[in-house]
Length: 565
Image 1 (cartoon, rainbow, N blue to C red):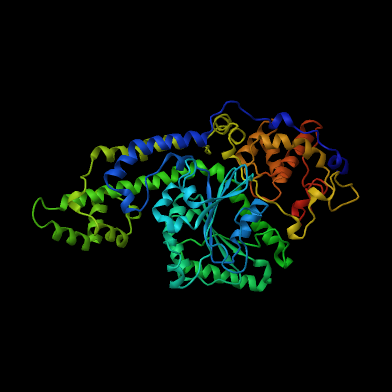
Image 2: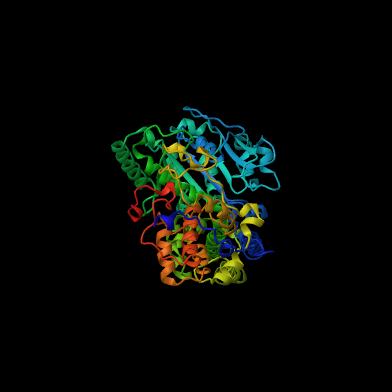
């Protein structure tokens, strides 16, 4: 067994080579098609029935479809929002303010650029290549508290980060902002791909303003990720109680039957203060970073999802406005009839819902919609256009489903999957994975990448890895497969193994041995192990072992797994 384990594999570079030239970037293609669908079928209905007024959502522009994924961070002051961004970027950024007091007093958008500089909000809102023109509606008082922070960053090539002011408590402090904080958050939430809610382990109270902010995130529950930050400053027993208290508070605040996903840890570059839960914090951070890393790959699906939600709202608004228009008298008593309809709005909604077989979730909030109706004249409304409704229905039943077929799915064969994926991650920087930080030293471990540039000898049992040389040779072929956040998807890894020509039973055993952490994905080290096992069978005719020898298991994964003890 020792000879079998210690003989390095030459590497199966030809097995993992997978590339295709001149493949159209699917994200750009889908964005272009969505723009066409919106302009042709959706925008005319929005203008006809004043969607921008009733939903306080401006008409979409081309740059919003082409924009990079956005990540918005929300939390009370001193929960670590800015420190988290600094950790993610691996450096300071222009305009950065960190402190225990409420230091971030403005919305800051972090964007990639060739030089470090801050961009005032008024200039940022009229920039032709950035999707912030819609913020003009909040006026100069907001734009003076809005700025862009530009810096060269590999992270910002793939995503845009939005840092928000620390949320305070008290009516006086809300008034002093000079703008409607929750409405601005709602504007960004509509366009964000991920919303991160941060909580301090020492400050779990949810203030009125924070509750109001969470309320405007309704409808975006799928985007929300919660972080219990600074958890290394309490011991294990306290953490258990704090975690339970946070879930209880969120359960009362977030109107969702599902428990929110809460990541626990210390999300900055400093070493943990308390190592009691180091393994837990490392696993939690790895999961969160994986979520962030694959955002660009999910961008196309997110754009489709947001447009579908908007189309459903537009269609329902069309029915509501058309119904209200039809109820108005031709000559006398218009004001009286309008007031009666507004007062009876719940029954009006119920009638429209049953008549057109609509979903209750597609209707606007009654209180907000009622206040909007009081400011307009029903007699000026447009009637329902059957042509427009047919256009919207075709979008939902034909155009967008066809667009979804261009995305990878479980029904794809390896050939069609390669046609869809192609070299997208290489040809377009906007679609690459986010290079998130990995800090083993932060969790009390030696950083194997920097401890010794020439590796370790077999005498160092803790750090020696028999496949280190193979890993260096296989890195290029691993990157060519387009890993998402450093991980090969189950489908991609399966295709690589199938190409070896080994039997299904052999590949099943190799997969079980290689997927050491049992998450269904291959990282670089697991990929190397899999290639090594395949090579041992194909080139040397050796049987597949029942368990991995200790020297074949990557040092980072020797955490007491029974499969190789």
